[in-house]
Image 1: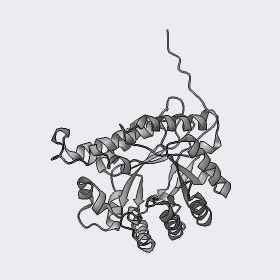
Image 2: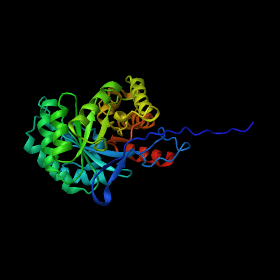
Image 3: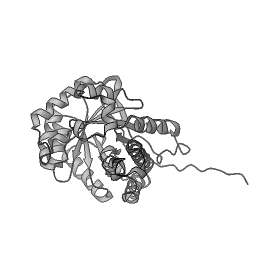
Image 4: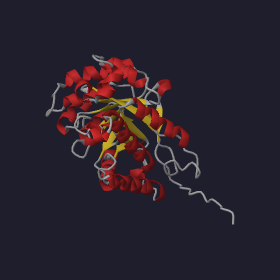
Length: 313
């Protein structure tokens, strides 16, 4: 008996969000099929791969990643090398040095880094704060102001500071707002609801619904992303139809599998290989679960995931 494939068609679709300006823009979302279901319909915009750089890379990045940029590389040099990485679609700048519990760099110093990176590249730019809610409320406001006209994605507006960050980033300076929640469909939806109530248009919002490294309770990530995509497409839930971006690097390179030295764990094999494997596996899982973009660090990870996307879309 012949197999008759019946495409699963949805009347709803994921919002299209364009980041960047000029000839180097990229668009996330736009699909009305499940992730990589090209047999059900055309995927308008393939998922994208970003490269994360950091103002604290010299202290926090793995040796194999620091070696790619070279010792003493300036932020501008790092940005150029990140943008030139095979498979890279955009650069993501992580301002981790602003954390009051860490280096506690002043906002003005971080803004100088932001401008240096932005001036060095012409590809789309994503800027992540220091992950401290109070510091980010001031920092991300200044980031949005400094990059007026660049149409950057500024992460992240959270439940605790969405009014400040959403209003400044999305309304005052016309940038793209990254709405960050913690692996919970209800929290993700509520944050989108209140952000749009501020006046930020849905087409100017990208969700960061959170992730975990594979093996670290990852099944809950899959469940959450699957429910978000299901509600967006099959239930036409407009408050869950924003595209998803997932910062993978910061989750995977901090795991013991990626960070333990070969001297401490010789039976685990080379540390670089372990880190790459963790990053690739997590990114692949995020993409097939519904993420429209992933942020990675290692050149091999970026190359591998970009190749996977190209072969599946």
